[in-house]
Length: 320
Image (cartoon, rainbow, N blue to C red; front, side, top):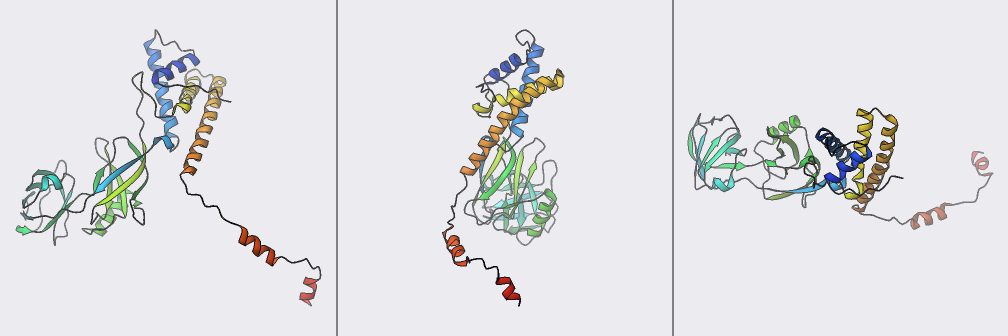
C-alpha cells in the first residue's frame, strides 16, 4: 500500500523528492533547480492525465443581443462609420460585427472611437465599406466572440440556462461555413467553436448571434501553472500530492540515473495513488447524477403469470 505523505507546499514537495532521491540541494543550486523542474514536470503530467474534478471550473457569459439604436452614415470605400443618436462606447467593441440593414456584407469592427464613431477592420488592417454612400441607415452591431477565463485549458460542456438543447461544438472550418449560412440571422446560438489570439488568449464564438439577452454557463478544465515560490500550493488536493513526488522520482531514476528497479518502485507507488484518485473521481462524478431505482414487481408478476409446468409431450403433440 502507498505510504500516505502530506505535502502542503512547493518547498515540501521538492525537499521530499530530494530526500527520497538522495539529491543534495542545500549547497548545489544546479541540483535544486533540477529537482524543482522534476517536480513541475510531474505536476503537469499528473494534472493533464485526466479531467480531474478538482480542475473543473465554471464560466458564465452574458450574450448581448444586437445594438441598433440610432442611425449611421456610411461612405463607399471608407472604413469610417458615423453614428447619429448612438452610444457605441458602451455598446460596441473591437472584434464586434457591423451590418447595414439590407446589405449582405458583414464587417468587422477594428476600433470604437467614441459614441458616434467606429472604424471597420481587423487588428492590423482597415476594411472599407463596399456599398454606395448613404446616411440615416438602420444597422446592427453585435459580438459573437467572447473571451474565456485566463486559466481556461479545455472545454467540458457549455449550455445556456433554460435552453432545451446544448450548443454543438464545431471545428473552425465547419463553423465558418455555418456562419456564412446563418449570415445576419439571429436566434438562439446553436453552434460554437474555440479560437486563440496571437497572445494565447482563448475565446469562444457562437452562431447565430442571440436575438435576446442570454446567459451561457460552461464547464472547463483549468490550466495549471508551474510552481515557483516556496509557498505555492498545487491545485491537486493535499491527499494526492504525494503522487507528484512519486511521479518525479520515477522520472528521475528512469531518465537520469538509469536505475530501472528504483524507477519501477516509485512507479508502483504512483499507480496506487493514481488508482485512488480515479476511484474518488468516479465516486464524485456519480454523486452528481440523479439516481432512479426501478421497481421489478410488475416484471415479477408478469413472469409468474407466464410460467408453466414443463410438459415433455407438448412438442410432440404440436407437431402431429
